[in-house]
Image (cartoon, rainbow, N blue to C red; front, side, top):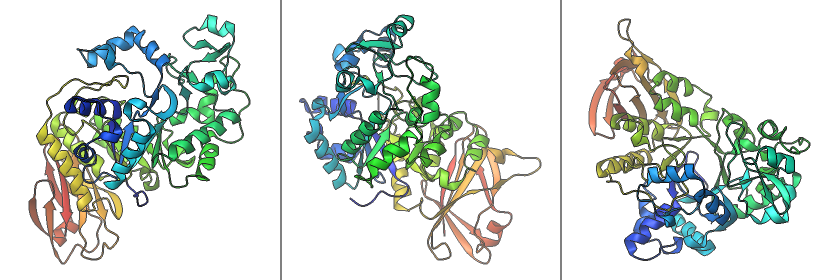
Length: 498
């Protein structure tokens, strides 16, 4: 396997659901060691550089018991899966009992077989790590109670939802500062040197089984956030360390696995902080929110950020925590948004089922999802989009956000966003690319200011790569006043310029 690409394309798969469907189709249990070649091919579409097998670790029986006793959770399960059966509920993959591949999925040998199958297709394997908490029956709860935020009987009586009694110790349930505690997990102490050492060891163990690690809710472990969350609860976390959690932990990991790519699930505008603390990529939740708001001006403002920062963001329209995009945007706007995500700098993340137009977000506690009629035309379009971006090497060279001008009596250009990719040999004959999207529900017209000084004096061919339309333009007009584009709501152009 070669080194990670600068701008990786990641495909997320819900491991339990995927294997369950393969098993039902085969009429027998299918583990990661027995996945047919055609199924591996399906989750490594052309252009994909990595597959995130979400939820491979051993889930907690104690967490499952708590989930089955929670009426609100059970109601959410039935809402997503009306014919819910007891065996469909297998517990949360983020309530980890041990970082060992679940035997139901083939155990460690199955995981090794999965990594080999992906590598044979040129794809890297990404796995999860949950730094903030563990399951209540994790071995550390009994053997290492000092790893956790501790309280006393008074805390347990005053806030029984926030604390639990385990092994003779009152320990805190996991939480973030803005929501109630999570009832199925126990809170680790990010200020503890012992926890930091154990985290580095666990990350190293995981890194030995994959090529990249996605760290759940990574911002919770930063010193400021952790102090704000736990400084006045129970006995507190103890003295604030002089060094941040992630630089210390990642520094130790790098001595053994310098090549492992770390991805942070990040919110609250903490992406830059986590990039500086050692993460290769961080979620770009702001872009996702602004696309769903159908606010092109806000998207354009977001894309004016420093390119070094943008190049280390993960762009997405879906993941297992968010609603299905087909349920949030009309079809035309979804396609325009997908073209945008596929052609921006940084990493891109695609979610299994997104291509087929699935509309139901399945809770991660479940091993089965409802049957939905797949949109085969949409699936073909998505695969063509990823293949086109890869085959034409669109995301190579220099990226630049482009200005779009209107007229005094027509400012619909504000609904239009455009950018270019210029290959490193931009002065030669290699193709350049321009992407134009209308992320609004109104028509848009404008003149796009192209960034190339060599436009005048030559004729230029513009080829729309997704529809195979062709246009001929004179270089003088492209230079001034610019490329005229008119887009209907949700329309987009992916233009090759020669």
